[in-house]
Image (cartoon, rainbow over all chains, first blue to last red; front, side):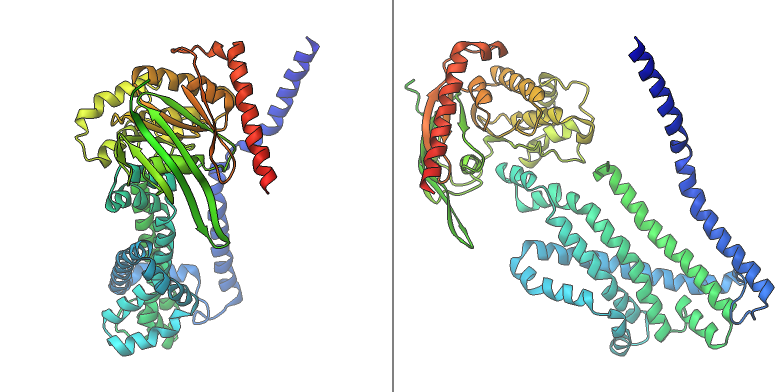
Length: 275
Length: 262
């Protein structure tokens, strides 16, 4: 009897100790990073105003925001080609990358011949090759698209190849035992099993594809946010350059969000709930 | 007893080529399985039992000897096997009913013809009401019940089971043995069952074949003559314990013989 009382007391005590620990963790996960970002912006604003740093060196966040609102039409005109070319480069890289990964999975000769080279290419700083793409393909959007595909395709190929060979060998064996064709095994087991890998490759790919387009615009272009940044900084118009960067961040978030949304939608059909 | 062999293995051997030289997994295994018979392959881990099973499934080719099914040589996979692995191997994105109907999709048969059978099988293994659940919502034992339904959906004459319950806890395992025995009362199948549990083999089988270590051969072919249906209480019968003892001694002898070779 006394033991029961003791264990009850113990339960109550531990309950009191653990209860506050679990309160509000999800709200905090959202509030904390926002609080940090707001504090940085606030310190930046106060620092610029107090120290009198000239706007050409560091404009205040408020001044940048004002410019984004005032010149939204010009910014948008430059944001559209950058966003579209990034999306185009990413879609091409995804399509071609997944096809190459399928080839690598099914052809041993292709895998032996190509995979070491792909890994080698993954290691070299591909940005250094950007001027060559302009030289080969001209100053039009095709060179930026090609370069964007070139730098974003590697993580997609490597992740998809890993995903396609990660299927449960017994699930493949089960299909084989039912006289399934390779195509049936691919559509029913290998590809759905690879989807989480493919999306993680595509999430890296989309950010790289934006970098590819911006680098192309840095080198030679008459439009796009990369061009705007270079143009503005050459005229010491730091506020405009910063505003272009803000819009670029928004565009990047939009594109990344689209990939994340596509992942969520396929997850509903093919997802394996984690944990 | 004069029925012809349903599955026949004749001097079957399997040698794997590896970097360090050939590995003899199976050496000269010969046995027959009659139609409707439940035969267990019993032996220590890594003695080539699963390899034998995969050869019967047509998923692996023997290096020596021949395998036959209904008098015809087994040359590759045929759709008349139902396979159950140690892991339930359900497709995680498919519901219970879709996993059960998966072989029908692969065999390109009309799904509508098999939906009623799928529901019946699911009900018989005690999963009525779980048809729309996803595998992650089920326990290990429930998943393996789904795997049993999936193996039976296309009504194959042969069930090949590769240590199907060895990943389950002891209590669930006993329940699964009862579920399997009940299912086989309803759906008469020829079963080749790989296990390393002596009690499980005796409870379920008509015959138990003991396999020695590598390269493995059949060292004992023991008939289990308990009438069916069998109650779980037969495990307390002196005859049951006697059979378990005979099998254990045979495995130990095989083990010692293998150890002496090395």
